[in-house]
Image (cartoon, rainbow, N blue to C red; front, side, top):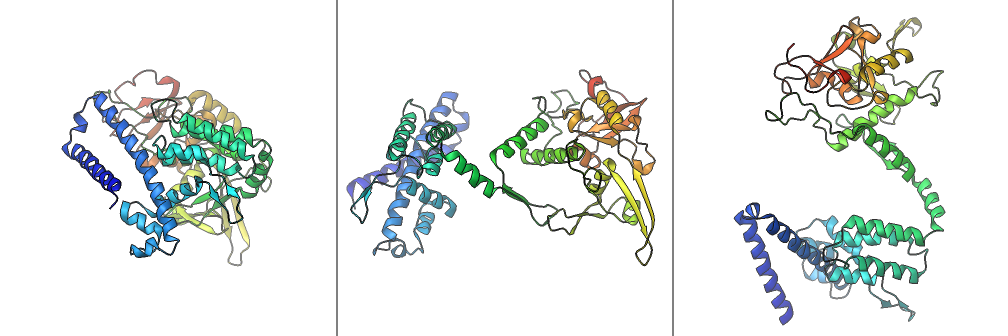
Length: 463
């Protein structure tokens, strides 16, 4: 056995044993701030160097598996990928990533024609092998450059490679991946001035938005957005999820009693609900095209029995992009029905329409303006969704005789409107002013609280 390799393996085994003893002893949790930070820095050094070794190993095993030696077969594996899986315990996708990075930093080589092909990103390869960057850093630095390498001068690309590699050794601390990515993207953009039109054309050919088939109560959505559309959507999502830069949440108990937060949604769930808010507001926008002479309206169908029972299933036509009726819980029908127009259609046995009635429960522009001035934002305390993004909720349900009037309407965001019954919130009007009562886990006293601009400071206790 190679003496150097043997000594290295012994040294690595001792390092692994030392790490294992620290993790199993529990001393890390009791260590000082300086010791924890120093340990983290050392772990980072080892991690980057280990990733560099894994990438180099992947390269060696792939090359030797492609020769008569068949390293993979002689190791009782089907492929080089399986060799790396069995020796390192990582997922096949991780090995594929290492293989992709191997291709990124190919060394210089002589082609069959006798022409020498220069190395790809030799400076960044050196930064990887010396542990200045790891797999994430290498990918962050090279991804923008790989996209333009066939359109720019090789000498310019080599210069950018040197600049990025120098960034990794400027200070003693490791450079953050976001910093490398931003710098690489900026330098690539400066080099590839003429490539903007090509990228725009390619992006427009690839833009897509697809609605899948409903499974387990959800309709998958996939696609690719051009950057300006993605940016516009991101701004809207941010404005709804955190419209005033304030953390969402509802707190009625003193801080020493509880630190509960009513909004337990994940960020992806918040993004979903924000999209629902946007889509609910869009149909009434002045520039929206008409559909059948009116603003586009989602129609939900439910049978008379379902309406009477207040539970069961309704259907939404074309909700999964197939054009068929998709069953949805009646709660969805109730939510949309609170904001829209309900049509009652009676047909004779031969299909002839014998009766058509339209019950309008939509608050008009003047009513919405007045309610917005009164409530300012969603009436659920701690939710700061502004009036322009809110729907209007009938406090006394329209189906139970509630009127479409300012004294029976309150602002409420899509999320709270959609799940108001499930969340346990109650809303009432007190002399034309809305009040809310939170679930008992938020306020065990179950007291009614003022909303919006009337809720100054800590809400008063008492019914």
